[in-house]
Image (cartoon, rainbow, N blue to C red; front, side):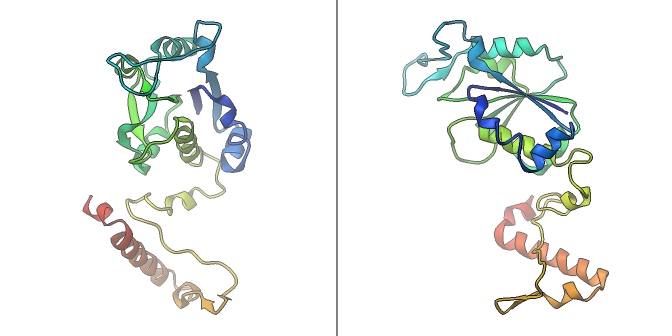
Length: 224
């Protein structure tokens, strides 16, 4: 899978692409990530990519020309999704990750400042996604979250893909509590059922705990 990331700050991805699961995915060529510096397409010697908004108001807006030039330079076909991360987008969830995990190529636009020019959103972006109901400085961190979530689902990246299928949100519920050695720590013990070796009872316990946690912490998931 190929990710083309358009950003003003390509250096933010340096460590991210070398460490942990994502680093393994890059090294094994399960994913390829190419970074495009939007400033390279500014068309001016000062590499300026923002300007004041029409109509007035605080903040600056990313100009359309540099973003459009960067997109054109990729020569992506029309079937390639172009994603823009924005607080106005649909909320990212596991279903969206699963859908995009089968794509051959994805283009990501990392915005900054107040926003990007709406004409790019209207005519070039195919999907707008939010990572939550809050605002951060730019689209680089959401892009990393998105790439990480997809990378771990690619063949050969995780030692056991079934591990991902037992995570929170895979089946619409929160995951179950997990325990490991030692059997007792600081007076706190592992639940007896997990030591019983009775797989049916263990699965029943995990299902009940999953529902219990979801009902307590994220009842909205049950409503959905």
